[in-house]
Length: 318
Image (cartoon, rainbow, N blue to C red; front, side):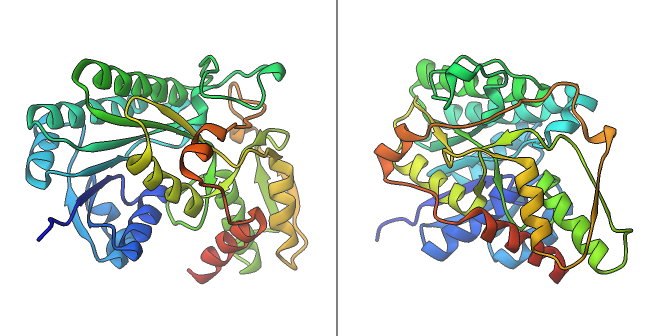
């Protein structure tokens, strides 16, 4: 009998990790093992009915034990400090938690001589400063990160490349543009605004939403579309290659906010909160995912308004 593939997901309690686990289970692609750092994430993933391992991936011994015991056929490395604004306040923490875990996992796979196929989750934040003539952004664009988070993801990207070149490890790098969707622990702007709208609807907050930069343009997609792309990347992607995963359309954050406000009957005032503004911000992120689409046939399927309605309904149901 053919062995059921073992699929290891680090950061399974996060937005992408939990939706990826849900997708893989529904598709019966293999045995899914999720990794959380400690039991604070256990409540988020308990509905998934998968094997959960606690492991601090910044500990090389713990990471090696995890890989030796699970022997994954596929590894989705999604664990990270992913909240960009927080990286300004804690750059050392961000670097430590976004670089060392991948290094420890790669070393563990190498030392255990496994043929694991690895999907290394990068970010569009790696591109950073973009000039008008460079849009839409291709994988070949120069990387000019504008945040500590972006720098950490560039380091991760290069680490994956180095392990592929040095040891022939099957590492497929993805640079996913902004993905949003229903989830409890996800402090992105759309989820934060939806949470505030629901608090106002329930009379737990005055009818005022506090926001950051609304002029920024972002390439947004539903997280459920993103995780479909992750599976295609790890199974169809060429080791050593890097792929943009994007909607290939950019909308202003003002448009996102206006769409959310159109989904409630409450009249709400909007105020700029200086605390929500970044020291430097990427003005526009517009991806070109043609390389990935040609390889896999993938394309986003869920409209932005539907995604935002799902996010609102998620907070309303809590």
